[in-house]
Image (cartoon, rainbow over all chains, first blue to last red):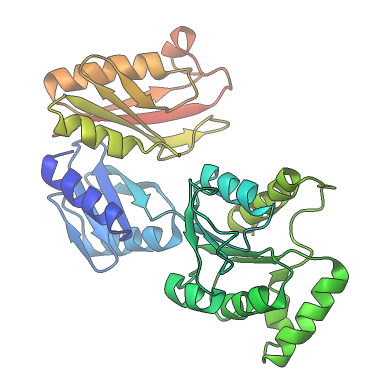
Length: 230
Length: 104
């Protein structure tokens, strides 16, 4: 990899700009593939570049056969995100497990006493109200959102914003009873049954989890399942 | 907390060290590390990351040092059908292809 390609690749990764690196496995020649352009000396025809841009969009690395030999396409997308709402006892194990699983994690809780950065070092903490924080974070198709507070003042605006986003996973902690009441409130905000069905509640895979860490395992497992085996 | 092999490789390069990067480009059957997994090696054989879970790292590091020496990229095959398998072998029975390149 020449110094120019390495520098441009690292610059894109730092700017969280999706990029793929195409490498001819015979010659070692390389090209960076962006959504809207390319950079680097490897010669590729237009159809091939379009195919690689499609791989970038699908978050899928792999090898393509070309006339000049096999070309490996390595997708460097920014990490998927996990947005956790509510700095309750489950939040810390959930956020840390999210970091371990490769997610960029943000914990939101407007109650400053809970969300101190001293307790939570490995991930970002926001003390804004969930509607403001969500407007800033702009959850996309590679985002997972989990609400944990049980407090309608905090959970509802977050879920409202989550339902208006294309997030691949939305989960809400709470008993069946809490969840039914929550769905009724969200319905009043204008979300129909199909939209409400996107919310996993009670949250997490049913593995009989009891402790905060076990519940975090069940939630992270469900997020992984939603992403890898939808 | 997830170590970023490419960031480390770049940092080594900026310190003036010679660096080679190994990347898993193809896997067949049960292989321990997915496509895209990387291993960075410096001129002294110091390394970070993994391409298999320990089975073939020794052989990959050897090739990485050779790539640092001659500047040429290499495409390595490892698997049960490979003669080398007896030497370095993938215990899981899978096959992997690893691309090794020197960083400029």
